[in-house]
Image (cartoon, rainbow, N blue to C red; front, side, top):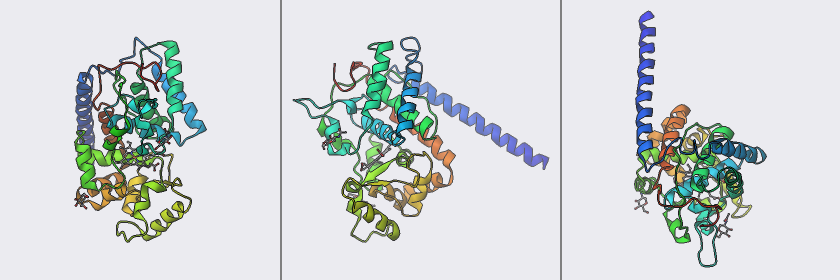
Length: 323
Ligand code: HEM
Ligand SMILES: *[C@@H]1O[C@H](CO)[C@@H](O)[C@H](O)[C@H]1NC(C)=O
Ligand SMILES: *[C@@H]1O[C@H](CO)[C@@H](O)[C@H](O)[C@H]1NC(C)=O
């Protein structure tokens, strides 16, 4: 009995030590990357964090579905030209921007970023980039509003000056299979496991019929027959009808993975994670152990937030316009 207790205490100690080593390793790499820093705005704009947090909280109390919108917007920003706020730019006469691509389907929440930017500009004009605001807003939406994992991100991203519709071909299509997804995410330095953890972002939000109708009206052993009827019913409302990815669209939890176990994945790119033997292991793990999902998601999100970060960009005055 005593022996058992000592053993589990030892095991816990070892676990804590391993965590500390991993965390300090992550911190070390982060501070080294492109001059980014956890405390980047400590002196130059000390209240930026509470402004982001309060504005996100207020907006999401009115409309909790915007948590999904902010998370997805951050993902799209980072996968095209790096996390440089390019997804926020409006089209102009001579340029069709990323946000007007069909891949923008249902991107929303630009007003929250504008609102934060206005407040921040009043306190410390020309200091905080739009890319940083978006990264912080997505983080706060996941944690404060949706009950997901907490993570801090280094700040100091600069805003890019390019936003072109043609670059959005670099976003993953919902029709891809697991090997294609693994390859695409590997191009950004992610492992297959990190790709599966990031796909867990689909614990929030919805897909429209146009994103999954390719799966209907044909035999698909990877799609539960009852769930196929649910999807068809959703599509009777038209291309823009919404289907939640899991039963709790506003809660950040591991029910997305549990849905995949039941063949209730909405997109081809969701269900394929369970069909593929490599990625299936991770799906099973996250479906069983939410803490493990949260831990891996949080680490992968920090990594995503550092994709191709620029130090030669600008700090946009208005997030919708290049200076
Ligand atoms: C693995 C490759 C991925 C593919 C193929 C994919 C594709 C899609 C598609 C097609 C939609 C629905 C769009 C619509 O019909 O309106 C969607 C929604 C969403 N995606 Fe992804 N996505 C992927 C990865 C990610 C990642 C890494 C994140 C964030 C970490 C993410 C976050 C979201 C969220 C939160 C929504 C819901 C948006 C809302 O309800 O407003 N996705 N995704
Ligand atoms: C997304 O792109 C479509 C064109 O494909 C455009 O009509 C729509 O306004 C865009 N949505 C947003 C939120 O910018
Ligand atoms: C995935 O898709 C690619 C391209 O369509 C195809 O070559 C490959 O065989 C598919 N893999 C599986 C396991 O279905």
